[in-house]
Amino acid sequence: MYIVFEGIDFVGKTTQIEKLKKEFPDFIYTREPGGTQFGKKVRDILLHDDFALHHFSEFLLFLADRSEHYRRVLKPNLEAGKVVISDRSIISGMAYAKSNGGIEEETILDMNLMSVEKTLPNLVIFLTISRDELMRRKSQELKRDNIEIRGIDYSLSVQDNISFWLEKLEIETLQIDSSNSVEAIFNTIRKKIEEIT
Image (cartoon, rainbow, N blue to C red; front, top):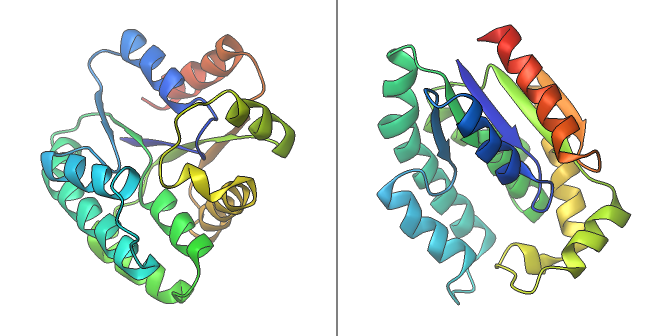
């Protein structure tokens, strides 16, 4: 069972995953990028280094990380019958690539599916946020990474594109408004996970 948390920064994915770790300690928890040693280095380059990467180079780095993560973490654990919870996935990768522009949708889809041998999540927990709430949460953040500094409109376009890819690929989705309380969100997530695992 492959369950993914999707949503832009500031929606509370990490908070919910940390609560899940306490509730379901036997699950495998991972993230993209950064779920492997290679991925941690890629994550640092993409989010924190001062390289002014072309959007296609950024796309390829994300693909390289996704391929390694799939082969070293996802595939072996899924084949072993484990429940895998991932902070982001192929869906985020395609959403960011679509928001960046310059790459055809068909290319984005084909290359991403190739990187994970067409393995898609069984369930996506999609945390969404309004413009006003995103602005409020961003205003409280002192340190921003290379993705976050692209601004509110960019972030919201990524959110729209996450929704686009989820619909296009017909992936089962539990969509939750992240302005709800942490506990209310967690109770909804826990109930759904208990139903399907």
